[in-house]
Amino acid sequence: MAKKSKGPRGLVTLECTKCKEKNYHTTKNKRNTPDKLELVKFCNRCRANTPHKEAK
Image (cartoon, rainbow, N blue to C red):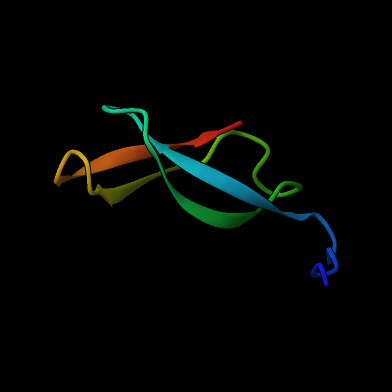
């Protein structure tokens, strides 16, 4: 059974900017943050902390 959506919060996939691997999933309030999300996370392929941007 799928989880019901509550308001403007949606699921977002984060992609490594160096190797382009999609590593993380998170939620984001699309009403408060309309621009793309960017976080520094650990990438297993690069073996380093790299910036991860929101992917489509």
